[in-house]
Length: 345
Image 1: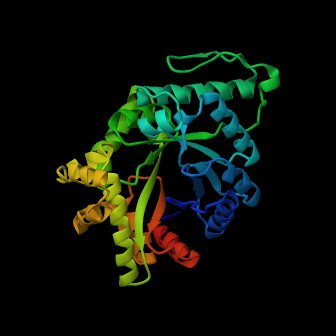
Image 2: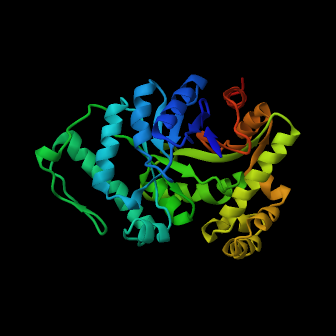
Image 3: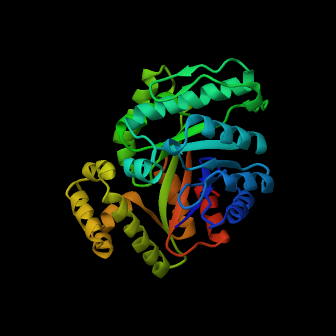
């Protein structure tokens, strides 16, 4: 899987190299292609280090984490890293956060898990309180249910950076988390396992309700849509990419947290079947259960020019899109062609 973002409806790119330096090189290539942002993500490598290198190799492109695992870090450590990257990039950094799931937080990171939506709300509040102290020198006094930060001596305060605080984007799937995003975050990462209809019928109304509860205009929240793309130069390549994407959909669909979109489109019985097969390790049969109708609800496929046009037509609910390419690795020219088509060129 490879990933990319566009610029009127902004198109972004996701770095997929196996080293921080490789990710930085990809960010520089994305900037040359005219993409709006380069995203790193937290899997087998730290999500922040590549962006420090990318800041030195780029000039204009936004740089963000999509996502960094919030609950693996306390708000202070996250705030300090984000502050440094905002300074180092000249104001181009976006702090993208996600919760992960309970087994990873408790068993992989040995951290606490409880009421993730409420915890994320307070996490964002704490990070912003810390940044306010960094910028103004005012006393730090965040006291919450999950996080308390009341000590900041001059020796540990990095001081003001003379620019806006980093934007905070948050990933969410369930309605409670999406409401919190609408109430508190600057941006919403749309999980790739979604459909346009589910977004407009269910997810975006939940975000609007959260914004209304906080007295905000929902338009203040940038919708950043991660979109699965099966792209190729010919029918054979496109079919191969679609099969690869089907495997990813089967993996996502096996997780109960993502059952909402399946239920919404009449595939409610599919999730428990996929879950059972996943426990048996039968990945091939799982993939075969993803029919073409379901695939086309979630995945954009075609040639580069077709993909770009279809992304623009499909993602009218979003402010920016990151195309996540499955199948054969697309060439830079193919990506540039898709981006141009998405921008109506």
